[in-house]
Image (cartoon, rainbow, N blue to C red):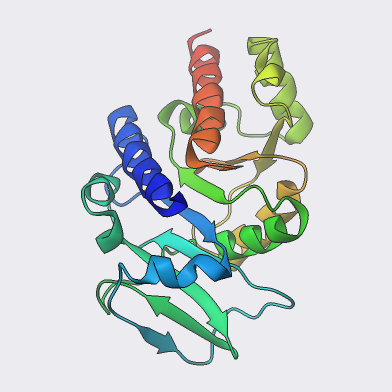
Length: 234
């Protein structure tokens, strides 16, 4: 079942990121888009159910149903108990519905970025259902060293370091200047880059990657973090 496959990937990815040192303390978040006809199967795992009235997030058209990590959850704990550290978010009749293991658990502070990205992916790249945001050490150091960049500058530097990077990151890498974590500004400025890139660097913050699976997204992050490490050592 796709449910077991996704949960197993979450466990593997969380352990992998912890071992890489990419998710200090409560850092990082991830989400997966669930087809509406599969939602009830997923919700069996979470007994609690409540509604947030007067949803802050207003969207036109279809809205995604997401499995997303909880705010404040640590990847090392998500790996041990994924259902206890993730929740389900969907919209109906103008309200946000949240299913979680506890009423104290709320979605990641980056919820708005995830929702906007998944809504766009539903329309343009429906096969891409996984979104990962983490804090790769070398990449963040790299964006502090090469801080005054744009998309073209970034990709030129990356390709100069590793001329074969385009064979791994085929859609090149997006670059976004610093915006406050969890802010609407971060979400809305990330969105246009999703149409052209599967990997986006958030200056001095980390990166966000999309893929058919979580491992597809992590592979992109692995490549750019390695190239950033080489760049720092030159």
